[in-house]
Image 1: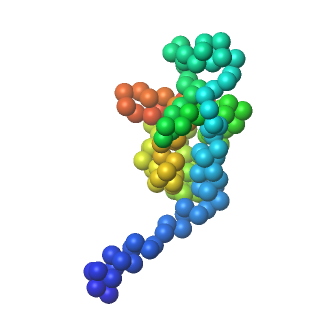
Image 2 (image 1 turned 180 degrees about the vertical axis):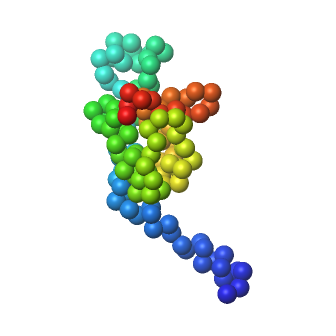
Length: 142
């Protein structure tokens, strides 16, 4: 096979791990973790949407559309549960629930159009904390 044929063949090879149920479920979870419009919880209504004193962000802007985190399904423990399943399925190794999260590895099994939702969800759920540019998994979420 020529080099050109090998390159062309590579274009059509799809990583079969991306079609595993836990990976598909994690992508679906990311897609539905945010609702349309700004947050309308009691705190956001009372503060007229000023989130400056909040520990975790409630409202987000993705591609010019206002969205809010769905609190009922996006607690740190919820995010960790679906992430651990997808991680195990994709990497064939348990996710370390302490220390730094390898975000680049997570992005390997997250659909590219959902990458922009990944970090906001991880931070807003309290699952990870940005410490000097590293994402550290928080023990209380485990």
